[in-house]
Image 1 (cartoon, rainbow, N blue to C red):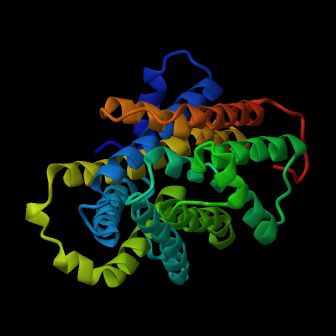
Image 2 (cartoon, helix red, strand yellow; image 1 turned 180 degrees about the vertical axis):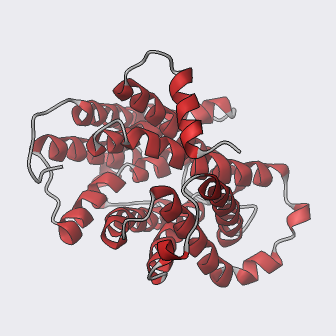
Length: 316
């Protein structure tokens, strides 16, 4: 059976003579494309199955895949699961994000929800400071501010009256709460880590999230007629479990070993642009031209965050 190290080696060999940073950037481009697909496909399935049901199944499939990778790689040992309550806390935050994402996609357009997602780095920076006392460089503050403004522009669809009146849609508001849970998850993962391998930790988090969703969504799971679900629901389920969970985890880990964390985080701002491409590929109409300046601002934020800078010390 191919191990995680073997898989990483094959990816590296396939990319030929590219430098490690270039490979990291390509991995994060793939990450952004796959994450974007979960918004477009999720919107098609959101009203056809209860969010708790599809995400419980998604966590079960992802945990099974990651469990196989763990057994083929670092292995699973009892000592790695010290203080298992940690994985229930982290799994709960992760599960809350995905359930609220599907709940928000019932009414919010995919492009708008992906724009809300780009607010996650800003919220992560805030939680990182409160929990870990991580300090941002001025360049990162500028990049996050530009990206946040671009996200708000897309969320309010370029309508200044809606922006100043804060007339936000119900779906976007629900998903914002999910993004807050996702943002809190990142520093909490570091705070609660006890030195476990990343693959093992992710498997445990997925397993913890599945157990909580099993309890929370038991009624929805029992009420769902799984054999009668439309094909698009099954396509979405397999996609979000394999590509938007297990594969994106692999790409994120691959890139994190080759790029600074700030540059890895910067690719969040490409997601709305890729969602637009997914929407076109799925036969949907383009968003209003008023939304495009917000997408451009997200791209500018990406360039600011990708630019090299000579910051040292506790800044990140």
